[in-house]
Picture (cartoon, rainbow, N blue to C red):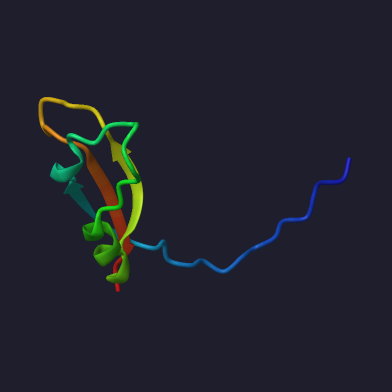
Length: 75
């Protein structure tokens, strides 16, 4: 039985990221029936290269309001 050929790709370094947790205090009282909520703070961070990768709407022990997890590549 013949074996499949092996392909050797050059090693490339993994991209490293920095992370930021942003509380959205102003979103705490937003209801489903209200108009769209667009926090300007996230747009400003997006202009700085941050990308939203996670969201928690849960009222928890560590955070008392919604939070967004952001990341951007390290230079």
